[in-house]
Amino acid sequence: MLVREAIGEQLADLGVRVAFGVVGSGNFHYTNALMEHGARFVAARHEGGAATMADAYARMSGEVAVLSLHQGCGYTNALTGIAEAAKSRTPLLVLTAEATEPTSNFFIDQAGMAEGAGALAMRVRSPETALVDVARAYAACKHQQRTVVLNVPIDVQDMELPAHARRRTFGPLGLPQPAPEDIARFVELIQSAERPVFVAGRGSRGDGAKEALRELAAASGALLATSAVARGLFNDDPWGIDVSGGFSSPLTAELVSGADLVVGFGCALNMWTMRHGKLIGEHAKVVQVDIDPEAIGRNRDVDLGLWGGVAETARATTAALGDTVGGDRRGYRTPEVGQRIRSSLRWNQVDFTDQSADGRIDPRTLSMELNRLLPSERIVSVDSGNFLGYPSMYLDVPDEYGFCFTQAFQSVGLGLATGLGAALAQPGRLPVVGVGDGGFLMGITELETAVRLAVPLLVVIYNDAMYGAEVHHFGFDGPPLDAVVFPDSDLAAIARGHGCEAITVREVADLAPVKDWISSGPSRPMIIDAKVLSREGSWWLQEAFGH
Image 1 (cartoon, one colour):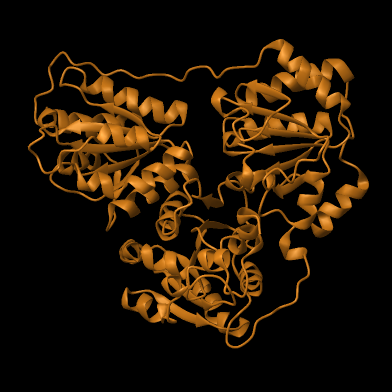
Image 2 (cartoon, rainbow, N blue to C red):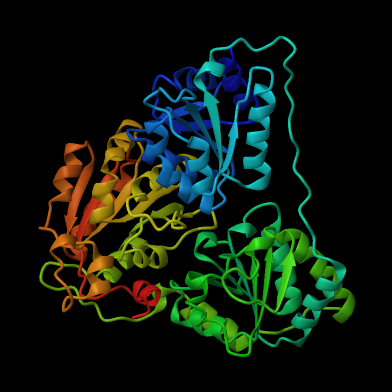
């Protein structure tokens, strides 16, 4: 057996079910080997799209996804998606061919680029070590939640695997747990708090963390919020208050800012989640729990940093708290707060004046009507841009696997591919993608992929005919905006040319075909070219820019 064949076989044996990529000569053979041993290969039209699809699939499935790339240019085409995945600690294995001869046109420092993007760089070093190298890279993805770039030199691929080469697996390492004195200090802070709020981030998804946090919150009297990436985690909890940060509803922002103890669990407590610190009261104590010691205190000073896994830390604290106080505390969980959460928590419950006019629909009106029309079993993905907050907060999601938020690198153009990867991870849910016109056109290459794969993707284009973030950042009365304002385009017609169903929406009545499309059991995408009103920057963007 050749090394290239052994790589595909071993990855399938380790549990890889789906790989994404664009096949060239360098990754042709190990991609075929992976398919021959039962994995599905999703052929994208561009490596950038493939990287984002793989990232989204891994996030929404909980599995390690593989991204298969050609050496050199195939690899560099995918770097934005790899950077997004690495920043988000997505369990993504980038399997890329590598040219090791400096005379090759494809020769570049692929390992250096991986490290610069925040990924782990590894290599299949030789036929003798190939199986161990693959297993170690896979384990780093699965057990450490890391994005790994595994370089596979072209010459090594074509070598014979030695008969004595043995397979092995690498099990998970135990997560750190805070020292008893740190747990004791945490208990003291909880005991002295009257209005505690827990904010759960991406580190709180999976491995029993959700249940452990709910138990600790009940014992502490804490309300349960999330960062944007963990949205939906506490939907079924009566004391869940949705997303903390730029997307917070007025009530959520009020409750978080009124807390006297804010605890981030696997959450960066960055400018987005805390609105540049505005959501933390002047006298509030701040605690941060994370498995990465370098993350603790990175974005703001904390009163207590706990180096540990979310579930492990929460369970230990619950046990210590129970021994101390012997029962649940009411804390922030008062009847008045409970009633307000039930009546006015979400943006869909907040009154506003519909400003639709002159053939353009208010994006709030558009989003609220879609929320009413669409089935509750959905998976929502979003691109980056001025429009971002509308689908993120007005479209409800069923749970933490119903919202895919690829925004760690803040790149415009990832939305369509994100939606495809998320759709393949959760095939029983209607996939919905929110994009701006700029991001849609950037990522339009993968529209053909959606049609080819018969994915019933609902793509909502918030079309304001401009790069709205830049326009509203610099202002209509500022410098010339010619470079970021465009003629209105018929994106519905372009979508039909790709084989999609498509409509143009200027008012609520124009959305009627969406209901028919859903009821038909669709097998191809529908594109909504919504001509939206965009007179000012969205609230989340104003918060980000500070004006």
